[in-house]
Length: 69
Image (cartoon, rainbow, N blue to C red; front, side, top):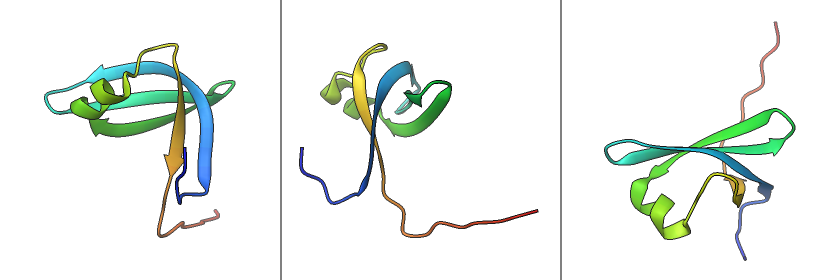
């Protein structure tokens, strides 16, 4: 896999919740740490995402904000 994004985290799919057009895919990237992505149902099918399978969370952000209390 070649990709320009530098934040690529391997994990395990723990949930795939399909809606009318969009699915929420939950990927466990570390013990108890879950990343959730909203992707199309078509993408879920094309990638053959299933609970228990491996997947990568790819994070591409143009801005990252930091705040303190």
